[in-house]
Amino acid sequence: MGAPVRQWSHLGILFGGLVLVSTSGPFFLASRMDPFTVGFFRMALSGGILLLYALLRHPPWRDAAHWGALRCNFPALALGALIFALHLVLWMTALEFTSLGSSALLLVAQPAAAITVGGVFGERFRPAMGLSLALALAAVFLVTAGDLQLGPRKWIGDGLGVLAALCTVLFVPVTRRARARLPMALFLAVIFLLSAVALAPMVLLSKTALARYGWEQWRWLLGIVLVSTIGGHGLVNLAARRFSLFRLNVVTLLQPLLVLAIGASLFEVHASPAQLLGFGMLVLAVVVGLWGTRDTPLVHT
Image 1 (spheres, helix red, strand yellow):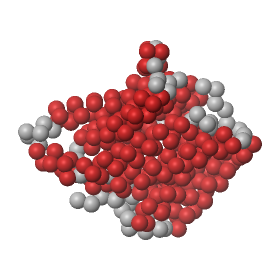
Image 2 (cartoon, rainbow, N blue to C red):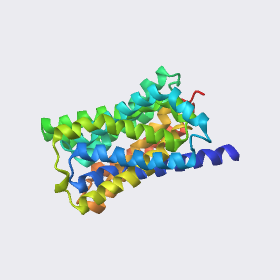
Image 3 (cartoon, rainbow, N blue to C red):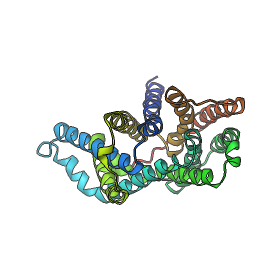
Image 4 (cartoon, one colour):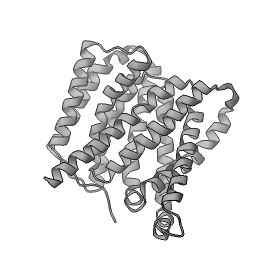
């Protein structure tokens, strides 16, 4: 009984994180702020909050081993932060070219990339992975077929969304050892703060006038920081310690449903019968992917 219960609890953590991460798209669109500004302050504020917590929870004079592990894993953390910052830039830029629903649906690229990247790191391919991916691709065709009539601008957004999804997959194995060896708050604090450093030049080049933003817009940004980033990415990275790369990413196929539900409460978002069928197929793809695979987490100590 112990192992199945733990597995369900880990799935609960992953799903909870996915729900919270799914708020970032609707919150960003509602903020009507410059994407680079949002990305920088999202990373800087999230990293600052988590670093303060890590210092209080694990002071260097008491937990020297954690801070020693930070020094040893700093190169991987720096590379991971660059990948994470690139993911944010690509994803937020994609939202300016394509629809919220389409950008979420293109997360189907994540389990596809996870099969390839996971194979490089020793994860075995299983038939259920192929079946799950086929169902997901069919679902995306049903939901996004209308994009074929919307011109090159939409295709650019979709391409950026795919690249953002690939960055998300690559981030997990690049940072796997640091994630396993560091307290989660310290791990995320360093990732977020280094990502903010990487995004800072883009904010300066964009010449955004911060004074033009009102409290209403900063409130949405605060929601992204606390809910989407600290809460959502915190839980997803906790789950990443326990799940194989494919299983971790196949669950993200549920994100379009969550984004649509959250978006419907903020904007006028409607789904056609074909799209509803596609959403149902996404759920089936997740069930097949989880049921037919096993966990071989990319964790090395």
